[in-house]
Length: 322
Image (cartoon, rainbow, N blue to C red; front, side):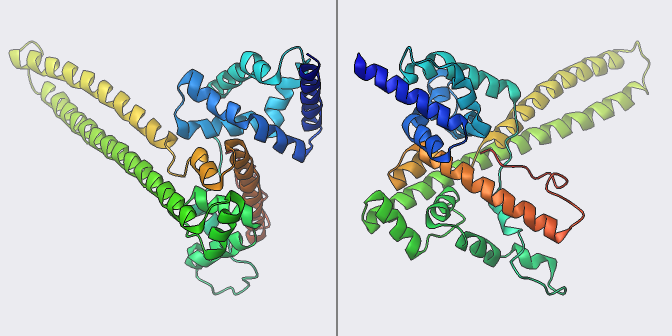
């Protein structure tokens, strides 16, 4: 019993430090409870794994989960308190908000201008090539650079230093690391294929919508050319009603498909990145959140420097929340 009391007291002290903004304590909390937070919406709400990362970041964004834990008095273990009083409400809040979580995509990073580029005659497309991305990633500490490359494993090549870093932090051999990265890339390719299939279905449905709309326009014209009480007019009105019914059905179908496309992610799942690095999902989520915040700040500053008349908010760039 004494041991339990000491554990809950330690948990209360950890929460207090997190509420004070102590970064080390927040990382400790994520390492200890990150798996629980990440997996909760999948287990309880059947949330797809690709969306669980969004919830994870929503929970920790701005210390949201820590504010929910202010009332924790230590009468039960913190894990039980999270499951019984915190996570359920957080998931519901996340779903209700339908918040569009802003991220820094790899394409946005590529668009960042290279440092010390003062030649006015440089063509606008020069900043969209590979070197700016390499330069930006080169400025990151190894752990962040590797996490970014694993997240976008199909777009970023790991160099020898990256592979050695992964081998060192994961205590794996280089061949084992390379095999794990290959599996990660295969998973991303599968996700991309699934996304393309959904997009193809959406395009097919759109073709039906356009066909129905054209036929409806023709029916409307034909109705204007025949007597309203004629047999042909009756048939045309029946066809019009059927076309309108099909059109409503197809538009709903397309809306669902478009929503799936927008929600589907073609980056590596946090859980698989954690497996490659032999760390926790919570640690990966924390690193990605800090990394994207750093890249968003760099992107915001580059845009301000490019156009001093605009600040970050004017450009619509906010601290990312993935």
